[in-house]
Image (tube, rainbow, N blue to C red):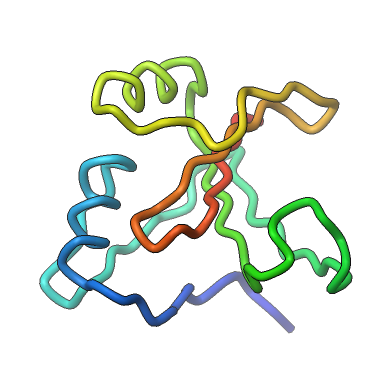
Amino acid sequence: MIKGIGGIFWRIKNLEVVKKWYSEVLKMEIENWNGTIIKPQPGNETIFSFFTEDNDYFPIEQQVMLNFQVHNLDETIQHLEQIGVPLAKKKEISEYGKFIWIEDPDGRLIELWEK
């Protein structure tokens, strides 16, 4: 029945600051309607997963965590270092891939993942 994720929508405190941050840090082209379209690429997948309310994988006070798949995590880390964005969690390598975390201007943790 479900064909894919249709969108991710949330309220933010400072629209212009957050739009600029996502544009500069994650290289997302934010359109004048305050969003962007991320088109699936071959080999990409979208994970939809539930966590119990006491699971500590990401902060309990954060209801949702964004996870973006990147082409090359080491290049992404270099980009983040060049523009002064600190890692909230150092690179972790597991059977599922490589992961880091950063924080957006509203303090939301974002996971970046290389499969």
